[in-house]
Structures are given as C-alpha cells and as structure tokens.
Image (cartoon, rainbow, N blue to C red; front, top):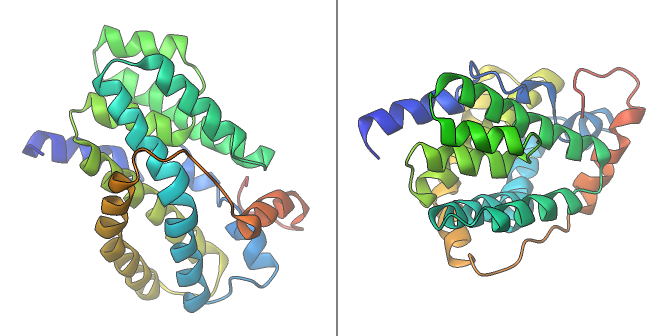
Length: 225
C-alpha cells in the first residue's frame, strides 16, 4: 500500500466520511434492550460472533470475491454476489441499511473522485450492499484484496463498538480495549477468508437475525436497525 493509498483508505474508513453507518446498530440495540448485551464482556462476545459468523463466511468473503471479480472486470459476477448478500439477510431493516450505506458510499466517493468510468458504475448500480460497495471502492483506490478486507473489517468493528458505547454502560477506555482486542484478531480472520475464497457465501446467525428482526419492537430507539 502506497502512502497515498493509506491516506485515502483512512479517509474512507473515518467516521467523518458520510455513509450514514452511525445510524444502524445491526441488531445490537435490541440485544441490549433484551439484556443480552449489557457490559464489556458480553459486547466482546458479540464482536467475536460477528467476526466468526458474519464477517468470515458472509460479508468479508463477499468483499474478497468482489475484489477478485473486479480485477477481471467481471461485473456480472459482482452483481450476482450483491444479490446473494441481499438474499442472505432475513431482516428487512438490515437489507435496507446495508444497501443504504453502500449507496451513500458510492455517491459520496463518486463526488470526490473525477472518474467517468466509476461514475458510470454508480449511475447503473444505484443500490448496492455495503460489502460490495466497499469492495468496489477500495479496489478502485488500488488496494490489494487483503488490505481491502482489513479496511472493511475495521469499519465494521468500529461501528459495533461505537454503537455499544451509546447503548450499554461502558466507557471510552473499555471501548478502546474491546476494539484493540478485535483488531488484533482481524489479520488472522482475513487469512482465513483468503483461504476460503472458493467457498460459497453462507449465513447462519439465528441470535443476530432474531435481534435484528425484533428491533422494530424496541420501545425507545436510538438506531434505525
């Protein structure tokens, strides 16, 4: 990764970049309301479950497949991956949130990068799941697949910890400790995903799925999912 690529990656993964991800908890809010996630230890378990059961077999693997397909110019394959991701999300709110973040990423990135080829992708692909959108954007920035996986994994982990800070009784110091713990696991997780590149996308997360679907019934909500 060149210094310029590093700086642009930091820009894309910064909370200042307006993709709207801060508005979604991906089921963490309903889990907190139900008392399933209530302190630093239980949030650590939630982070581990995300890495092992969501990022490895689904979101991270989807991003890797998209980068590989983009390298070959196989846009039909990327569209198929995008459709698979949508089908694997049983909660309507999660399908909406993922595509909303992806759309905002596409639109904002296209507005700051003068590239007619990328703009044509945005115009013909207005809705896109977040892992696919990040895969395409990070590939456009010239990142290798592993670096793109690490960057997207960081985005997702930071989002979970940020939501946790607003939902449960933990402080900034505990939040940073949890994030550090999760980041330390990320390179090994990425290696596992790369080795599993030929496997199909899959998702079996009943606890997360139920909490994501129950979010609409939370009495007082801070997040949209």
